[in-house]
Every structure is written in structure tokens, then in C-alpha cells.
Image 1 (cartoon, one colour):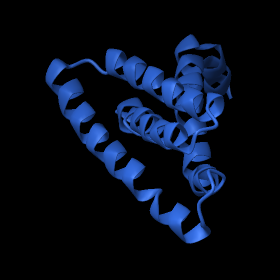
Image 2 (cartoon, rainbow, N blue to C red):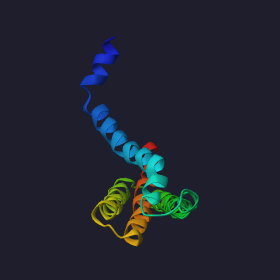
Image 3 (cartoon, rainbow, N blue to C red):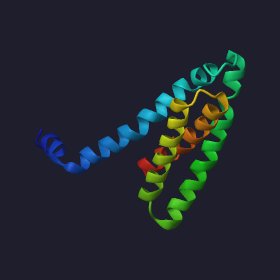
Length: 123
């Protein structure tokens, strides 16, 4: 039981916990609601499901590139901050605009900002 209380007193545990929550909350909210977000732009169910693929492909490319760059520079922090800001820009586009083209572009930015942070946060 002593180790449990020691862990609760360690500030590094709390920082890691908040980083993890900050990474996984947008990840799962984006993943679960992306088809609904796209459908609310005025597309059919079938088309909205198909339109979820391109943001994920771009996010995959960003994730691989970010991992290689972060490993080559031996620093993950600056990359994680950059991708968090990219995700914020994408989510802002989704919230602030009523134009489907701007919202769809926001899904690309949001996905490209959210997904690279997952492996970097775990590494």
C-alpha cells in the first residue's frame, strides 16, 4: 500500500496522466464521431463513411513521418506540441465554420494532429 501512496504523491505520475488523457480523449472522440461529423455536412450515410478514409490516410502518413523525424532528432516534445496545435486548428475549423469544404479540411488537420501524438506519447 505504501507504493500506491508514493505513486499518488509523485508529480511525474500526474503529468503523465494528464498527457495521456489529453492525447486519448480527442483521439477517441474524433474516431467515434467522424462519420457523424461528415454526415452532418450534408452527405449520405454511405458517402460519409467513405469520406472518413482520406483523413485517416493522411494521418497515417503524418504519424510515420513524425515518428521518423522525432527519432532522428531524439526529441518528441516539440513534435507533440506542434501536432497538438495542428489538432486545435482542425477542431477550430470544424467548430467555427458552416461550410462543408472548410469543415472537411478541418478533419484532415484534426486527424493529422491527433494521431501522431499517440505513439509519441507512449514511446
